[in-house]
Image (cartoon, one colour):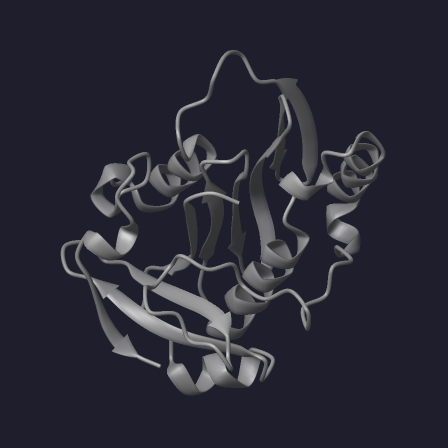
Length: 198
């Protein structure tokens, strides 16, 4: 895995006590506020090993469910197809379930991103506790879920860095993704995030 951006974004400040009650004890977290946007970033990490730099480690999946809910049956079917071909790792089921958990528990939309420079480019948006949009790179295919329907299309050429994350971020916020460094080689932590809670 190369240069990684792993972040869960909200537009209202999450309550730290609520977050602690939602997350398994094995997952630690920190809350960041963006200085220029109405945006908050939740950094998640192994509780026993807090990172020295935010938004750069994968959310531990050990204590998160991997089975997707019945409302995501078309994505589950596509995951099984991708698993047979060896490309299912592009669909981050733990991030989907975590986004739904956070959205439901925090009472607001949550955008979860897992994107690096080594083939992973995943983003999902959950509203009212249900994922409504997913974009995932699975080898040379783009897997998309919109309103319960999953489609697969070939990726033409070499996609830009974080291209799926960029698309959903701009849809979610209405701001340019470059504002937090998506699409660049500079990490989001360098783009105006201030820690406001643990």
